[in-house]
Image 1 (cartoon, one colour):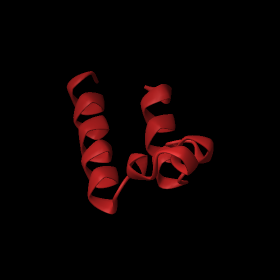
Image 2: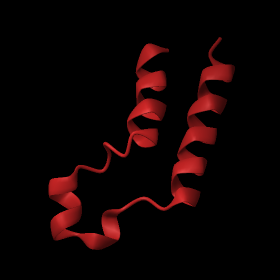
Image 3: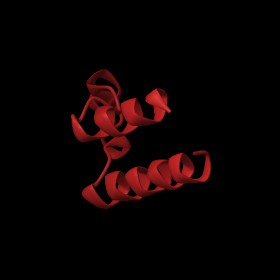
Length: 50
């Protein structure tokens, strides 16, 4: 479950996608809505596997 927590932390800290990738692909940036969806999905997976 620690890895799932890391996903949330990485998204919240704007560490993903990598800045080197978004410099080339501006559309690769995550919107606030994208981040919320990912976080909700991760939390759902965590709850299902407890």
